[in-house]
Length: 342
Image (cartoon, rainbow, N blue to C red; front, side):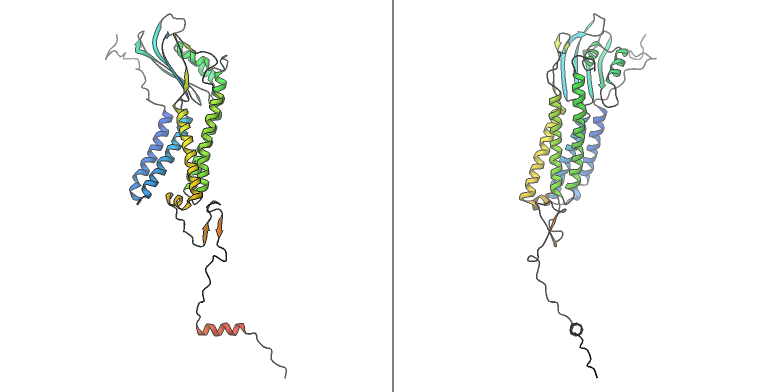
């Protein structure tokens, strides 16, 4: 007999679930903490540079957070359907549920939520993940799911992504996930180099690194699109309905961020060619720190200084000497005559 509000005293209750992926939560927390830290010191910056500095910080943190978040996201290809389907294998009982399929770069996530949640004297709310990252075996995870006796819709979709499935989805998405993730890590490295170079008097190289950040993101999207077709080779039939999946939010936010990096990089390169002084002012870098050197914006700034020619150099000025110093100089300049022989 249940006690204390239909809770059995010797059995643990259902485990609470976190509302989002813990890896994404950690990434968002880190970048939000950095943003709050920069906002706290914002009042110490004077004039218009405060707005310029805030724009640079927010844009840079947004780009870095997106590159890291989509690398661990399971929203690259998504699909969801509401259907009536069988609940357990070798059983005639059917349930009404929402089935979701979320494919990421490192694996597939399958959700099953009953409508309503309480059916057949059970709580139907499943969220299972099967990964194919390096060092992990998808087939072993699927075998453990069979031993656990997961619901039939979850096992049906997970079986479509096994290496032995005739659909071939495992090879396509696993290959696309590995190479797209590697390309995104290169984009993240370019983002780090861009931040370092934009804080130094080598703005043109920082612009190039920001441009490379966007190009690598777009290359990752192109490879993922070519390796993973929108229409699967085999139909995904869930009871009385068909499951179709499409590009998810991670794909589109990567596309928008890549285009943003390309546009910002091109704009900064053009500004460095046309109006380098305004670009230096935007990044709070003075153009006249060393009057003895003139930086050539076409050559890249600090790494290739152009020295002033002799014609551009100021004329030497005569410095008056004291009378004693003048006599000493004249004495040193006159050659010493040898003494005549007696």
